[in-house]
Image (cartoon, rainbow, N blue to C red):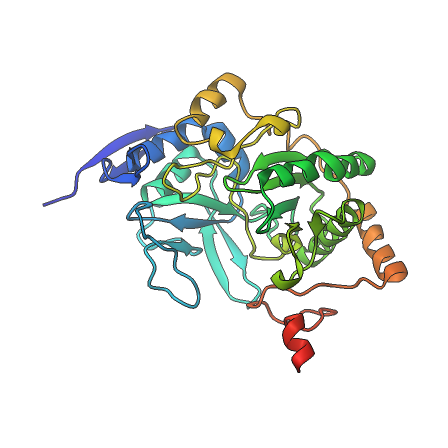
Length: 349
């Protein structure tokens, strides 16, 4: 027997939603169709976040049920998985971009141009969209600097907000940059800055590290840029490696795979002090979007030079002896990178 389905007109395309009544989020019983309709309701916002960006799909085809786990490199037997390459039997109208991984291999990834591209992916069980910080016209030069404030055990969302509203906001003003904050959909805060696509991933990551180190200097009791978890302590980690090639962050308006379907939601700087991540779910964000629009609506209006941050990076190396930091373990060894050995193990050796 064929599975049930509904067909939705999305622009000038028809998107089939199979098993529309399948429960995806058990806290309120939201279904796959609810997920697709959510993305349609924030269409302008999700397209602004994804437009022409190579995008990894985080697929939960069975829904976010209790005990479901995400496949990893070490264990690929999970119930959910990341999909980088566009699947077979994809409709001809789906837009893609060809990208190169650190290994040198290539893949064609979804690069949404029309809202139907997003709806089609949601029907595949894509709960979260993970775009690259590049456009498909130039996949080697990021147009976005990503500041990821990641609370470590012993810290929380309020700590991340304190850092964002304090040194991060001050430093953006000093640099003449416009930063656009959003909730991570979990415990963190992300701030995006559009930059001129003139620099490589390596250079943009170097700028993110220099920015993070300056934040750490201004708030040392609460901020860390230490890559090794054993050295971070109860602080908020500024994850500079999110700016490396093939590292991605859940996009603005992406749903996160939790039972109550939280959403990574753009907010204004004035809103940020009072927001709570539980305020934003697929049940609440559509009404907010309809009333307030997209706080990131002007994010593409200006792109900034990274030259000031590159000067900060040179200063750190020249005056403070601060060079590069380790890359994630699956990356090839990078020029100038220190040993990828946990400090405690290195001492034993």
